[in-house]
Length: 75
Image 1 (cartoon, rainbow, N blue to C red):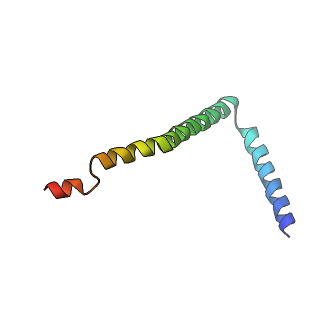
Image 2 (image 1 turned 45 degrees about the vertical axis):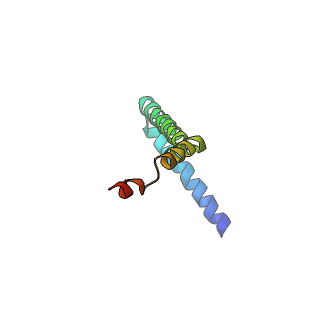
């Protein structure tokens, strides 16, 4: 039964891909490809913002400033 479901999934995916590829012209395909590449680039930039080095640097700055309670103690 699972094999039949997998076959149906693959067949329907292939049919939808074939159907949409017939309706998309070359400029639209290029635009979709460019947008996808831009999305991948922004995702990679976001991953770099959360690298171990950046997190460690932010943690050190946080500890140097005295943490979240430092402003409450001074008031």
